[in-house]
Length: 60
Image 1: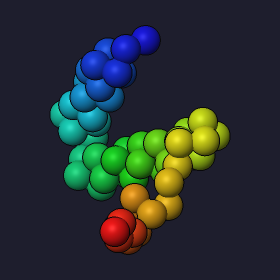
Image 2: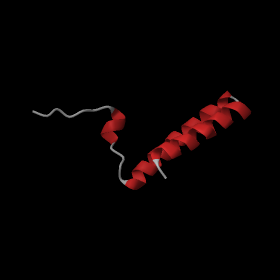
Image 3: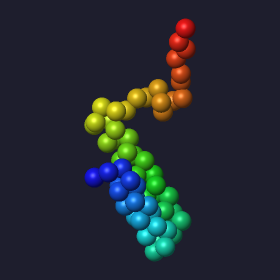
């Protein structure tokens, strides 16, 4: 499945939550989606904590 297809499904899910739920449900879905993304990136080995903390290394 391509990333644009996944993005489409996530957008549809968030749209349904916004329409049929309330603001707190919308925020809960966003938070759980972010946690799921972090867990997925960790399991794939793509999680780089320096990207999350904003620390940068200087190269000479």
